[in-house]
Image (tube, rainbow, N blue to C red; front, top):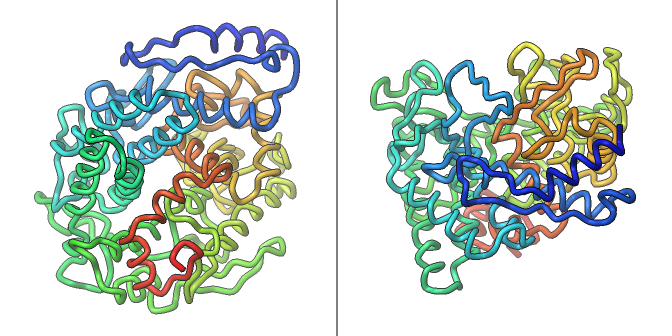
Length: 454
């Protein structure tokens, strides 16, 4: 099986993969190691990053050049949403493009054109007080994510905004065309009205607003979950910045965000928004930290590197202990996060575990636990191979217990794989984001300490 898989992989990787974006293809280099022996860690990481990035390049929604919400290799879309654009995933893909340029997966010119197309689309797309919706159509019009959730989504916009800052910092000293793109990214970022989403100047941010239903969703953003970046950016904004009290009273709930528990010997200082004393899905350790560097980052509530590392290792130890006896769980197959599930979609975590592993959970945790993450990558690639590996890297999720291996992808799960592996290897996106002057100012305003703002 392994030999057959390697030869099939050789054929697939040396062919030109043609998608709806026919002019955009990434040749995946093959090496002697692909056919003759085991890939080194660096070769394997290169391959995973490159193949996964294809989702955001060859697999991009063709009109916008941005990220599709999902891609199904079987071409079955029950909700007829093949070309729906996802705002948060697009932000992750934009950051991934910078990594792809630096790793020479694509040329600098190809990357520039891809980013320019995406930012031009964003500039014309629906915005609500500068805030994009969760989903968009290729026309640029908002597509409802749910009842009353048909317009501005502040959290998804924050995932995109950190990417805009990275684009600006990447091109700010480039040639005239690159400087113009940096200026466009800056304009889009500074156009976000964070203060409006305080709903009548409350000291908390709200997730949604719609011109059709106003504040009817009434979903205040409070910690701890994936939304730290929303408050950080709201404080950093030089045009619509919120006062520090919004962070401390809203996100941190006047200190009620804190707890003091230990799980499998790993301390947890932040009270996760889950039932009971446990940790949430692993994407909470990823989405806010694609640009925001958790290394040495701390405030009065937590040391964020230690917090994210604890959440990662709790997942690792949970899989080894495997209290529910799921097939395959262990040091080579771990990581619970939001993904496709056997019965639809679920925000998997130790208290909501259905035997489903999402590769993004362990792979995007690479900076926090490199050895443990590599164990998963090798198991997926060398043992499960074509059950979980396809045209855009590892599929979204699988269950060995249920013999369930759907050949489907979700953009917001693929993006962190490229970016967080890159951060673990070079710190590229962390360096770009943290170099922004307003990020340093905003973090200082909120009382954060970081090596990047000394």
